[in-house]
Length: 188
Image (tube, rainbow, N blue to C red; front, side, top):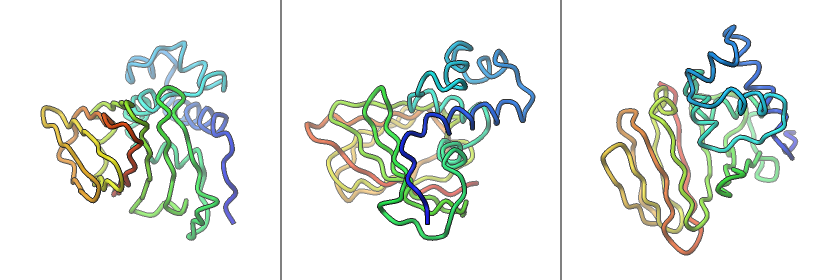
């Protein structure tokens, strides 16, 4: 049985350090490749700072990994069944965005992630965070403004959007209630 990940800060910090060291990159090299300051990367690796979704997106892009894979590596491999009570939930300390890893941690080809975005919250990712993925966003409740490069998509409950080629992306909940969506990811 999977055990819930209570505070993933240590697991994320270890994963970032392992990914950097496995490439034999210095802190400076990762900072240059990701656009995240050397000081922030050092704090993350020491477990002194919980990275925001944007920072994790930049780091995963520098590693050539989807954000979901970076987090999955932190959450570690597990069984083929993912019970709701055992699904790891991560909260962005900056926006309050929550990410639930719905899929089993077995590392399968398809990955499902449930996200809840608080009212007024905005989360942006660089194109590198989408380079190795095919993605669809299915809005379950609320409304979502999704900026994909120069294109703006306004999604309502039940809408499903297939993302195009990698571009800078921003998820924005301009509503007065949280919005909830599922992201389906398949590695290219």
